[in-house]
Image (tube, rainbow, N blue to C red; front, side, top):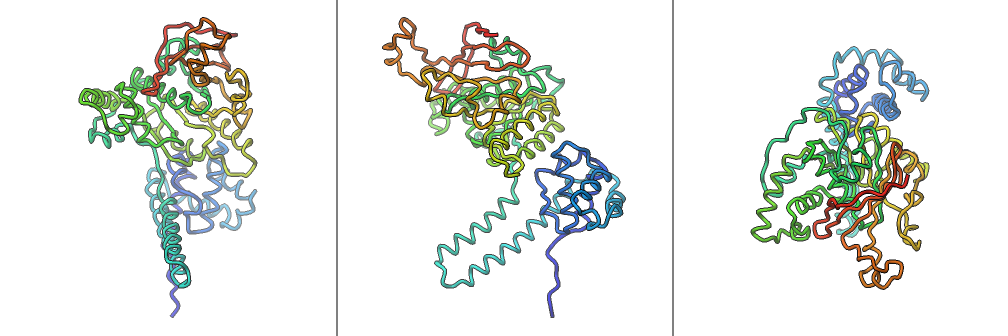
Length: 457
């Protein structure tokens, strides 16, 4: 007798997901990052959901008419059963209230089907008796790892939860009471020049490696969250959330970052770290350290957190590690799409988006290593789409104290140890110029310096 058992699936849940989207276009941001078209078992439902995602990516409304039109353009409308099938989906779901529950059912069953497929692949490896045992086991582990990777999805984690892992300590988050008109960096000269980080602006913070891009972004996040009670969302594509928390603790407690990382601090330092933990626990900082993020996932996660917590600032570290839509149009075009999407996100959520960026190696080959707008790596669209472009430059990175003192160009000038130039290279709505900040290498922290900015325009 032939076994006609179908792989696990739930037609009602699949239809309920799509029906929910057709009656409530906004519901898609709740599931776009966790549910993919291939998670649907019924092929027609895969096509319809793929169309919904495409409309979402284009910022177009999702409803019965727009979905039918897009399906017709793709030659799939009749194959799914025509407009009648879409009407059926709308009729079975009066509200989108339970869309996340339906999506979880579809996603879990998709994982089960992948597990069945993986089992078949592993069995096939097992039947290849001549294969080296270690190689066979490694291949089997890779297959299961891919299933787990497809099933798991990292998301925003409040800093309190990360701190509790470090200290096994928790506490309630401070609620946001009213909208902040603009986010202050708490660097006096910079805020004077920019008027703070303005809502709907895309701010690009760029520098060569090891000059303090992440440190400055984290200091701004800390200052906004603690001093202004702002809600800050951090997408960290390069550093793990644990490493970010250790940096924040080091900076807040004024304890050497290496000692915090190794846990080898003195009794007095431990006391300061515990006090710093208490301060940071009250901060509304949410960290997502997914290492491979598509821009659509950034948008969806930001929308969802904004819906729940009202975001005041989004930080992306860093821009070149983001992935576009995968259309294979070349990296320059992909970066262009990403910067446009980040600018659109800033306007859509009405928040400043601070995107950390790498600079090209051209900086290193010039006599003067101070960066220019043309040094922004991979795409001129970064300069074009950004409302503000900030560069970090530190003389001590390129010159030792001995070299500095022997250089006639700097005759009589003290060695700029611990000084950082923050260059405002572009300011769409105000002056450009330079300010100086103090950079503390020991704790990777930026501080105010008693100095006025030097406007250039």
